Length: 100
Length: 171
Image 1 (cartoon, rainbow over the protein chains, first blue to last red):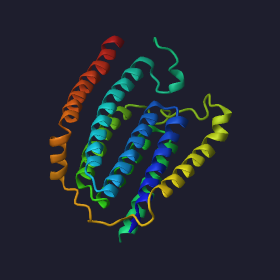
Image 2 (cartoon, helix red, strand yellow):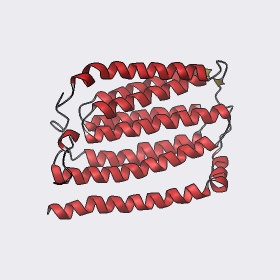
Image 3 (cartoon, rainbow over the protein chains, first blue to last red):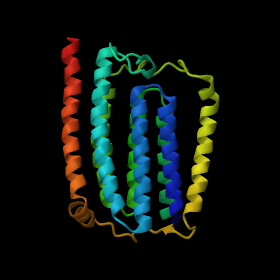
Image 4 (cartoon, chains in turn brown, red):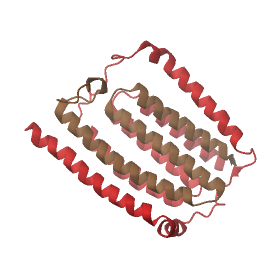
């Protein structure tokens, strides 16, 4: 038997790890992966709360979050490919101009 | 058996997440994100959300991570990472990690007080069947479902435009 709060604390740990990766890393793809980690941690809290309240709506929302994350990954990776073709680097500190 | 499985997968998810943040090359970060997603899928199974666990494995660990790997693999493996400490402020270096730990402990205490201590998770007591989720989606969430399908279509078109245009421009 596990208290429901342990699931939520695990979700918080993963979210804070994602925030740390987004803030401290300067590689565009690593920052992107950290955003995905944050989305996944929120999904875990959604599923845990779905168990807690005995409601399936939260699982439907997790489904929608996953689909939106897929769309975000597709567009984001296209932008990454375009940036890499145009600038040859994925270091975010070097992306300081709007023009090439 | 159940607590053992929970703590095993929780430790795996935390370890893989830590590895994601600490690795130098994005390829290893992406591989550890796959580990996080697999552990989370097992946790969803423990919570009785079979449909979500399956979608997590197929959509996230399968499709999205394959997409990531195809973008990452052309990067040079040795010096494709980042220069350590390149233009990083001293405040971030000294205060960043402690402040994040403070945030995490605050969150943990708030969460711990939020739930009654006797609210336990028992395996197999929540019948979250896939048919019920489908009924929920197509009865009450049909408009968001259609909106999301259009969103996916627009995102796919946008990706083709974004990634294809730059190729013709650089020629």
